[in-house]
Length: 326
Image 1 (spheres, rainbow, N blue to C red):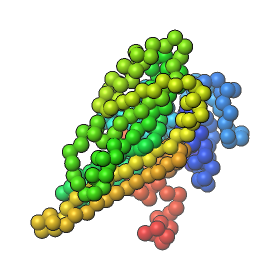
Image 2 (cartoon, helix red, strand yellow):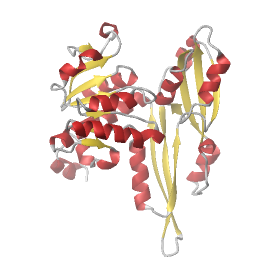
Image 3 (cartoon, rainbow, N blue to C red):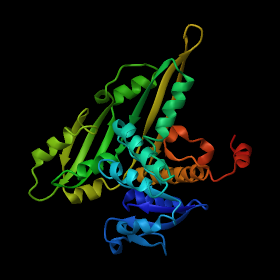
Image 4 (cartoon, rainbow, N blue to C red):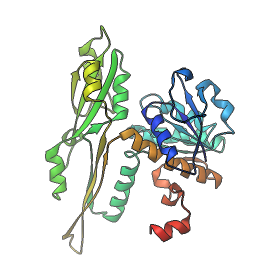
């Protein structure tokens, strides 16, 4: 399978790492909106090209992995490039997924391509954990807690605010709520009661701190429903204390079975990630394999993680999977 990468930030570099661990995958091109000569890529002999050249590669790439941000990049890029390539993205603005799906589905079907959107760990693996848990324990309630960790999408959204030079955003579970759910309780929790958000922001010279703070805490779909704390710090402090990109979280469902619903059960799925982008990139490469297989079968249009059988993610044959993993 021949892969292309569009966007060479943390996620794009993570895809490079993942390709090296998958023998059935070859990286054939990297596309950027920046000057290609400014990129120091890891893979020798792979062309690094300006995105203006991407149409010349329509017949040379099996799957294009889109590594842009969800705030402004992917809503435009994924439908656009789904007309030229089979594509995968990690679009993570949950409230806008139905809209994004519809746009990408229309574009991909026009030209006989296959796309998978919103695959990472949430949305992605956590979405699947929620679906399995709901199907198995229909009488119950589920909860998702994220962090403590750096959200790439939220950090990117903050960095795009005028006057912001750099930023990291941490999502932090509210301990009291997490402990209550783990004990088997089923409380009604608002988003504000489940998480807080902490932003560490480096301002550009002359930027209005009060305006930037207001734009952050009032940002729809990102911060407006949470208790958000904004810390203004220097670039040196950010580089020293907030260099890593850890993350993780929990999907928990408490449910009941039995004649009178007297038997209690808890399903918990968790992740602890030293590098959010490297893990997300590994998920993207696995789903690129699925996209390639689906397209070869003539399954065109947009898919989500719910539509894809697990075997499509693996480089192993169905016989091998039954023998060693079932």
